[in-house]
Image (cartoon, rainbow, N blue to C red; front, side, top):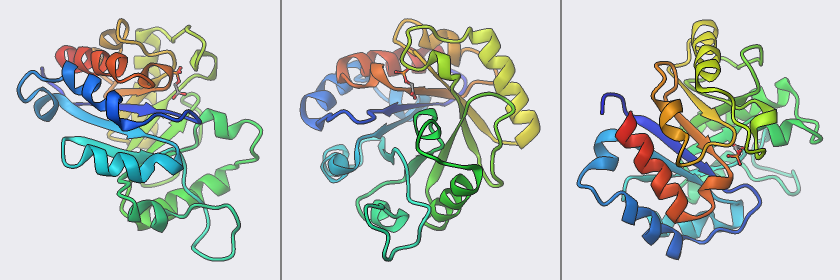
Length: 225
Ligand code: PGA
C-alpha cells in the first residue's frame, strides 16, 4: 500500500438503502485499519436518501456525497437543492458535471462554474467529472474524474494505460491533485486502474449498487494501491 485512493460510489437514480448494503460492504473491509490507511470511501445516494445515509454511516470512515448541487443561492428556485441544504444533511462531497447531466439537461460550463462556486462556499470536496483531457475545468478544482462517455454503464472500460495518460494530461493542464477514473469499473478491473501512477481512485456507478460488490471493489483498490 503506497498511495491512499478515493473510491466513490454513485447510486444515480436508484434507491439504495444503507442497512444491508453497509453490513455487506463492511464485511469486505474488516481487515484492521485498511480503510483508514489505504483510502477514502464516498457514497452518493439520491437526494431523498441522504439523511438516512448520513445517520447510518456515522463516523465510520465513509463520507457522504451528493450527485449534483444547485447553481442557485437559496430562494425562489422551484425544485432546486442548494449547497446549504446538502450541507445541513451531512454532505461533504459533491459531484459536478457528470456526463449524464451534460447530455440533454442543458448544463453549460457557466452553470457548472456557478455550481463549483456554490459548493466551494459550503466547503465541499468537489469531484468534477470530465469526458476527456479537453473538457474545461473551472478554477479551484482539486479532484477531477475522467469518465469517457462510451465507458459509462457499457461494460467496456477504457484501458488503464490510456486512462493514466489522460489523467496525466489533466494534472498537467489543470493542476488538480487527484484524478479518478470512472466507466465500467468492477471489482476485477479496479486494481489495474488504481495501480496506474496518475490515477488516484475510481468513480463507480453500477458496481456500487450492492454493498457486497462495492466492498470487494474497495478492498481490491486499497490492497493494490
Ligand atoms: P458505471 O458508471 O460504473 O456504471 O459505468 C460510472 C459513472 O457514471 O460514474
